[in-house]
Each structure stands twice: as structure tokens, then as C-alpha cells.
Length: 415
Image 1 (spheres, rainbow, N blue to C red):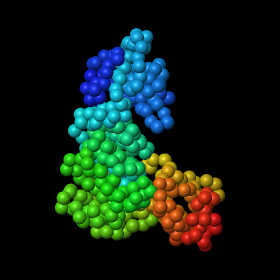
Image 2: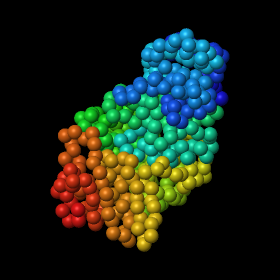
Image 3: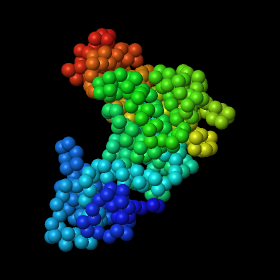
Image 4: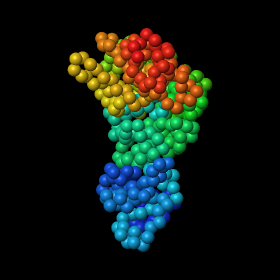
């Protein structure tokens, strides 16, 4: 356990100690006074619509040991009232958060597995972390806290863990670059390059560039990629002599391929060679994309020297973060599949394909809008209609605004 002291925080942030003890050790960190715990360090984050700095005194009243704030003028009365606490004033709390997290990361000589991609980041993270946790004490991103605030706070949770598994998301260029430079990954995973945020970035090729920013904070990393993805396959062919790249796939010949695939509505089966030994694997979730995620986890396990048996157990026992293909069995044979979190084209495509595996049931798809698609909005919504038809959806329910767009290509589906 390597906790930062107040003097460390002052050093890395160039902050001013208003009151406090330089030797005090900071353990847990928070940005939300509603959930703050005794002795937490509260960091006041200022966003576009919300300024957490104004709640610094609330944080102390609720038990925080320390507050880190900006743009607060402290009176002599404030200083006297809170003289037994720690108050640090910095120029920019968000920049300070980055620096504190980066500093803490540097204190640990441990593997850091970073995961990005257009879709499947969270489910891949869940499988990879479960495999790794069979051998090592593992810290992973909770839910999808994968942005410039969630990732640093995840790193600040680090105590005695032996591996970190971090999810990295983005909407624009330079966002993953920031996360990578804070986390300094030793293993970089890219699940796929799709159309999420294509309206912001303009093309799938630009999305690839943004995802490859994951390498910018890494030194000689092992890179694990989905070789079935067209753009990642092309990048691999162009860069395989430059980087240490491991590939996985179903269609393209890769370092690790799935064979003898059997897809069922609520689980999947395949076999593959792990270290030259054939292993039969059961994935506790339906869908071909979860086989790809499992292959990725196998390569991550091999990279961290995890035994075959533990790798297989990690896949067979993993649990998904909520709203990623949750299945609820109701009365009269009704099943509800909740894949509501992600609404990109690739996520819709994968979910509809999984729905198509429920061959014994009438299939009803309830679909919402897909955002940040820009000029591609009409075309990609029409493609979802094609997917719904191809996967034999019986009824398609969607909002009035997009209903005609979906139905243009799915005229044989009841809408």
C-alpha cells in the first residue's frame, strides 16, 4: 500500500496548503459529497454545468479529511474552524487530479492492462479482469468510468493490487492520449473500430487514429487486437514488424482462433489452442462477440503468465456489468434481453444477432436512437433495419422520429 502524503500532493500539483499536516496520508478519494466517507480526500471538480468546489465545506462536515479546491477564498474564520483538517488550494483541480493519479501510478511497478474500442470495452474488461484475478489481486474500472475523470479516480483506488485493468473511452481526438499518459499501460487492447462517434471524428480511419492514442503513454507494450476487424487487420499488417502485437479472431487467421463454435441463446461454446493445448471453453453469455472477447482475455492471460486452467475458469465464471445483455426470464416463457447501455451500430448489430439465436421465441426488438453519427445517421439507421430483418425480428418498436428510417429497409417486419 503506497498512500500519498499531503506533501506529495503539494509537490505534484504546485498547490498551496491553507491548513493541514504535511505528513498526513491520503487514502480514499471522492468527487461527490453525497457518497463521501470518513477520511476521504474530496476533489472539487468544475464542469460545464456544475462546480464541485462550492461544496468543500460540506465535504469536511461529512467527514472528509482533506479537500483540494480551486477558486475559493478562505477567511481566517475558515482556517480556524478547519485547522484540524487539510485544505489544499490549486490552480486547476482537474489538472491536479491528472497529476496526482499519474504520480500514484508511478509508485507501482505492476502490469496495467488498458482496453479501448468502439464497442465491447466494458464486457471485454469484465472478462479480462476475471481471468487475471484468478492469479493476481486485480483492480478494474467500475462500470464504464472510462473518461478523463473516471480513470484517474480508478487509479487513486489502487492499494495492494497486483494488476490494473482500465477501460478507456473517448468522443474526440486527444482524449485517449491523456488517459494513456496517466495510466502508462503495459498491455494495450483494441477490441474493434466501428462507427461510434463517427459524427465527431468524420471517418472510421480517424476513429482508428483516436483509438491508437492508447499507445502514446505506453513503453514497449504488448498490443492485443481483434484481427477480424478490417481496419485493425490492415493496421496489423502494416505494423507487425514495429510492435509486439498479438491477434485473435474467428475469420482471419490469427495468433489465437476460435474453432468448433456453437452458439446458443444464453451461452456459447468453442475450442482453441492455449500454449499448444486444446481447451474446450464455455462462455456464459450468448453471442459471437463474446467469443471474440474471450479470445482477447485468453491472450491477456497468456501475456501475464496465467495457467490454462485459470484462464478457462476465468472465462466460464465471469459476470457482465449491468445492461450488457442481461437476460430476465419472466412468466409464460417470456425473456427480456437488456442491452440498453450501448446504442452504436455495431452494438445494435451484435444484440440483434444474439436475439436471432432465440429461435423458439417470437422476437421483439425495442430500439432507440444512435447519436453522434453526423452525416452517417440516415445510412446507419437504415442498416439497423437490414440487420433486424436478417435476424428474423418479428416486431420492431422504435421512436417516431426514427421509425421511418428503420422501416425503409425492414418492410417485412411489423413496426
